[in-house]
Length: 124
Picture 1: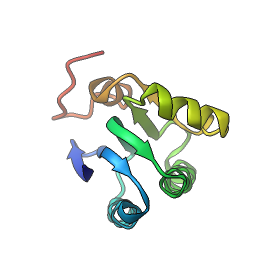
Picture 2: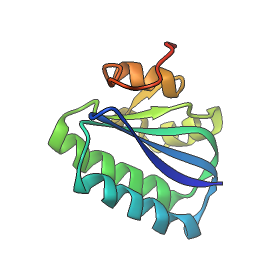
Picture 3: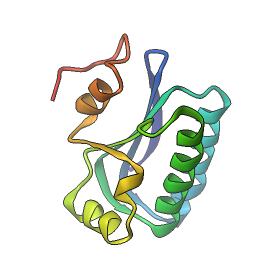
Picture 4: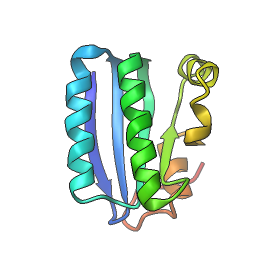
């Protein structure tokens, strides 16, 4: 359970979010996103394939980050990968899905981001 960031090539950062992301892990997510923006890649992928729950605060933080990042790098520069049906429905009800590009999994997201040289993209 937790949050980690991995650079894939020079243009992509993958933020892996696993387990239950409640209020106590929001601070770590905020710190990781601030770290990304110090040397921002063109694309940021939120890998939610191992995520069981996102609190409203963590969702709000992801939305705020997406708005800022896309303002700098353009629409499509923030991708959600491996979103569970439960989280997808919640985001749909809240009208948040249109803010992100969706990919079925991490490899598919990396492919959408141009394959990011040096990345592990086996295709979708």
